[in-house]
Image (tube, rainbow, N blue to C red; front, top):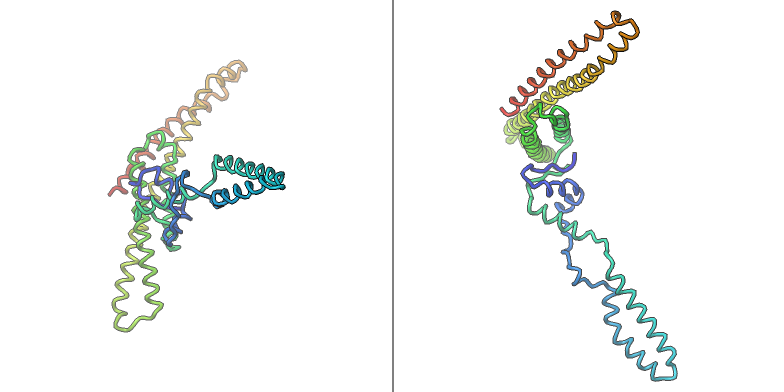
Length: 295
């Protein structure tokens, strides 16, 4: 199911949110990524240690070089220079750091709070209904008849994501109210409150029925599109066969058998016309279903 995002959120931000469901859950539970420190201001523990230890090492080398143990001083000097060079090289390397990514997701999540929903926002019943809606919407948007403009692809691209968001938003509210209602019932209901419970339960049931009716309308639309899709593919196959007719007719004529199968082959033209009409009817039915959704 994944993260559901308000279609009004910019696409690049929506993609970022959808790709980071686990991090969004942590952010919602209180996780705050550490601020991103510019590379010029970063100090690793080894860098600090090297900086602090430099005066000590220099003083020790000076003492050693002025004493009979001068060779040891040269060894210490060489070792220290080597360590410094290695550290400089490592500072120039790019380091993997998740903090900028996490911080970016965190800031977008804060900015667009309330305009995305996570899987945990839906109880099992609501999640099932949402998946049905998403499956129907996906089948329409991925269809060839939509891509070829036989449906109103521009309106589909706008209206169907808006339908998904509205359905998800209502299901999330319904899930939250159902959870509160179950918790209330689990604590026990006083007799004076029992008369109020029944209307509340009816409100929940009626709200769920209204959302499910929306999803069923989407599924009807998807079924009409699927019928148009089948006719579209069948028409393409018939057209491909029709384009080969001259070669078959030539072969039959050369073989002296043109009178045996010409009638069967000519049925392709009739079948193509039938499929063309079927496709038009299927597309018209899909348009009718679409208008029902808008209503």
